[in-house]
Length: 311
Image (cartoon, rainbow, N blue to C red; front, side, top):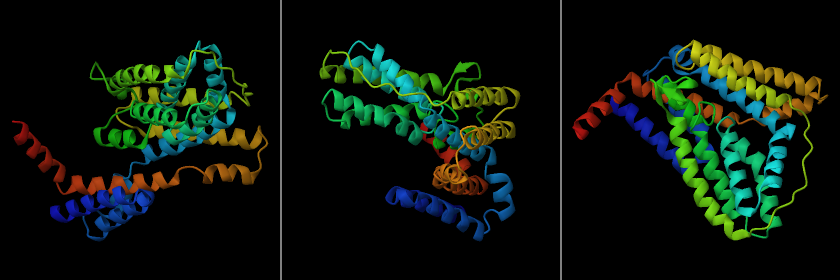
């Protein structure tokens, strides 16, 4: 059975690499195969292997991220940074650092959607190709996405497997954790991009300022971070409390969007439908397949092999 599960897992990852646009269906197909072969039971898959807390955190943070974009607060902060920057190099690196900071708490795709228009406007003003700046945005977003529990789905998968809570990404067993290692990478990246973009000139950049729609999504985002920190402190690992807090804040945000912002039912439903449900399905499949891999003892064998290999 171990060889069959190993073959399913390897084939799944190979197909995901070859057909990334179909990753959710590939992962779900592999998960269904492990259930049909009797490696894991349907009830076990739903109640034990699928981490609903992680999924609630992911969906809730997506909703809050969408509302954060709608509020225009990130764009307004970026405008302020650009206005205060003395030259092109400082302005561009400041935007890249801001991209990283947002990405540590907001899903990567949403972060890039917030910052990409600003990047394009900047490069147009100083008449340079946008390619390198967009690459910088992607690098910073992906780098900082690993810094916290809510930054990116891979962090959530890791937290599920290693039983990490939100605070464990900052301090683990009394020592600096993932977050601080990522910041070292960000500093190196910032120095590199400063030297690269400083060639764009020394003149100060002027931008048209964005009008802030509301600060409510910013408050929700702050409460989400504080709530996750509190839940991580009260319970080890990714607790049910953490998922309920984030999902509850997301529901409050949707009620605010529908009621106080007077958005139509169709507009609100469109926001919900536009969330990254593909990744939600992908995570469900991955949780079940990883559970099957653990169930048949493949991880223990791999750990023993590595132990022999490194002496």
